[in-house]
Image (cartoon, rainbow, N blue to C red; front, side, top):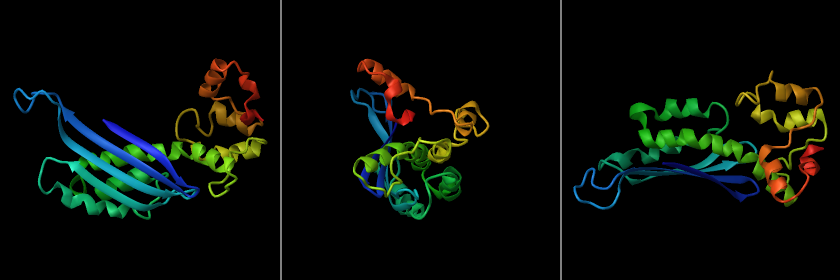
Length: 202
């Protein structure tokens, strides 16, 4: 199981916490044991500056591990400090910690953490804007086609919806409005509101 959560530490810092836990069914390794057995449990904390997305603090901890010397690699993950968690991060993680240079489970966890940091940026910016803090770049501006392109720049080419030559980005580039997200439309419907009034539809 992989669990990754992003926390807004302050107006300029994101705390990204990831955990991987490998549990085996009761009785598999220890006969008649009624409890599941945890054989791997690794936790990684990354402190990331916003909006640069640079890692300024890193800590990897092996709460449960199979071998006595597994924890000797924990300090090696200090090499994350100074890296950007944006594009190119997965490649750099493989380069620094792949194979015998790291722990398989911790390295795989890091690769699962990067998208969470990127996807939390919209919420981070919204929270900062509510407080009047511009450190994170303020709320996304959707008032003009140019502003909309700037607002979604970090999404470009991250998936098929955001392909730079795809329908959505072409529509924005041609001055079309931003689509109301499905989750907003659904929640507005549940609240009995008109989703076309959502303020990001400017």
